Length: 468
Ligand SMILES: [Zn+2]
Image (cartoon, rainbow, N blue to C red):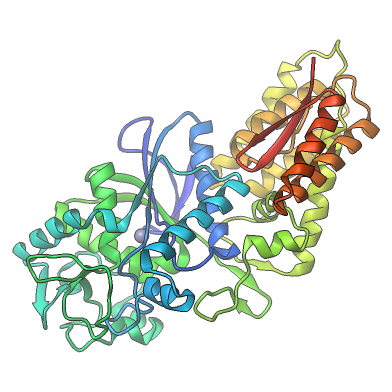
């Protein structure tokens, strides 16, 4: 498996610390608002990465955090806490806001067929770990107290500029001003580990600490949770490109200062989703959610298809037209696949299957070339030498990584009209459920049952098969 490593700025062979075991950490959402489809693009990339590793035989242990405390609007100490901002906006408590948007986040993941990581931890549940780490960093001379707050001294970190690939001067110019401004800091890139004396005084969630009652800085939570659940060494750390600096840079600085050894070998970053007039951003107040796409008739998995058609390290430009085109292409592809009927005499054509599987493995092993894997599906569908049973076998195999629900049914003895009727009814039932019209939804289910069609609702997706 070859992966592009932001740390070394090159494509490298992936070699985990322990032969076939992969320890993977992925930064989670700050749950003060809905995830926008640009955020979701990053989670799709991470999902494909995890599934590709599993497909290739690795045993993956993946951890993700939920940021429910301490994430300021800016990296300085004078921004408002994002969680509190959300709470104020909606007249709810911080905890209610966190619970609501966490639930909504996982619903989005389900609709996009993104696996929930094995371990998901709330930042506010691990305050003890951060305190233990900060104490050690302070004792070892990496952290200092200034005006009641504890800061990490970035000048003490080895290789502080390696991940971003920029020098101090360029970073100061490139970084948002708010990263540098905080008069309590000794150096521009020092960052807060613990705040007791915030300029922003109405922080609701606070805890006792050796430095007084307060709350942790944002960066420490990912290091703390990763070290706690994955040990001192991890193989892969992911996030969006906007995390490279300061978040991931600071995670490396404090984790390696704490353990005294190299922490993570491979850093992978997903590129932005751009809209025609720039980057999608919550702070600018205008952003698209999955729900908005659904209301426009775009299926969530068509959005996944749209995302997988481009490489995760390329910027992707989103427009109403481009996603509509993807939606049509996706629907057509599904129809095509679900119209394939298997002849009872069809055998699995091993040689051809192996050739296609090799191409598939080559593509995903080449820094996750998902666009190629989709081309491969179109190619195999056109292949006259390949019988339908082998085609469906291959697509089902590739789906372990792509997760596009391309196959809804193996059609033995089903004609196209029958399939169209069933799909129409499933669609109607979905709309009924969305409108909380459960009576109608149940009625449609019964009608389908009478047609000997069995429905299976799983993870927000309905699949069906014919009763034997
Ligand atoms: Zn993080």
